[in-house]
Image (cartoon, rainbow, N blue to C red; front, side):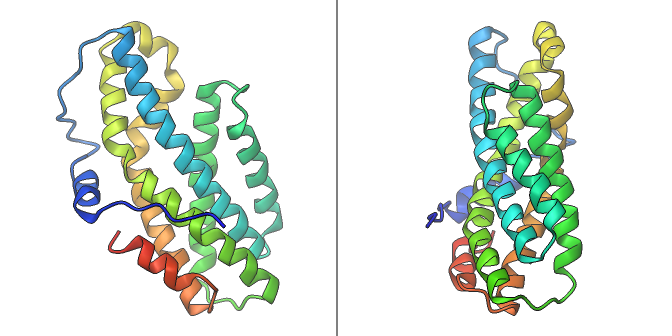
Length: 208
């Protein structure tokens, strides 16, 4: 069984409030291949790990809610994003678009009270650790996205070659905020539906 990641609340609090889409106040690092490479690596490592976890949670939730078409589409996206043979920028935009679209669908489904079959509860339980771990990683994205965005903007050559990143990076604060709302719904929905692991998920999230 996948284990929950942990993040201390003080650090978490800093990460969430320390970044604003309209107030980018971090110092621009010196332009250069090394700085761009490091900023890109820091962001993509967290982004792909968090988004794959989040999409895995969505996949299991769609199965739990008997939303089979959505589950199948999500599985294909997971496979695409995991395949490092695909271009990194395309993997990035695919993961962002898929998880964002799924969030809206799941939010709409979960606000409607619905009983689950025994099999549905199993799928729902499988989604919980992925949802929690995905969010714990995801809240670390805003400052990394900010740093990478400013590094790219300071380098005309990078800006031309990283168009896919420039589409996604400014949207990261809203992306994280949406995920927080949806994961909260997932966990509270697990409790109301008496899904195994709901208590552990609640405790793992803490005050996130």
